[in-house]
Image 1 (cartoon, one colour):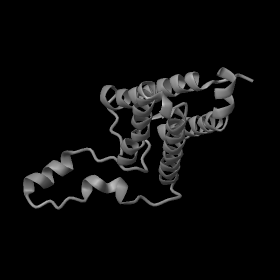
Image 2 (cartoon, one colour):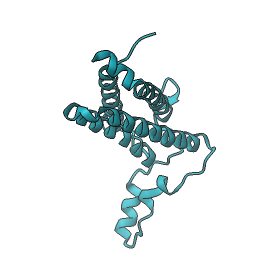
Image 3 (cartoon, rainbow, N blue to C red):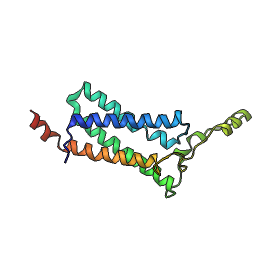
Image 4 (cartoon, rainbow, N blue to C red):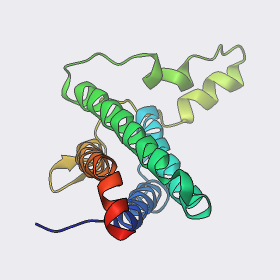
Length: 165
């Protein structure tokens, strides 16, 4: 079994989070696929993970608590992605989160025409797939893997700290 220490875990999590964000932005801005609101929300945990890992390099005496915060972040990320997958598969109805752009009160004809010209993406529509899986599915896999590994690193934190001392 491959041993993954705290430093390598944080570097790997940073690289995976950065890659996930760059990929999402590439698909959106270069390939032209518009994300739904939940897709945009699913990016927030990766941004949070990047910030926490950068903070860890400055304040590494809080490392154990920062790893705990990564556990919470990727647990929430997995929940959001599972919710989104439920909407994509038709198990869950779309909520107000999926319709945030449409909740504004439109009064003028110009605003109505502008709303029609905007491409509004539904959370249940899968616009982009890689090897037959939606990006939400990949997000679930990534979030769960990071969640499992970060939990393992957190639980063995004191043991690893004593070994290195």
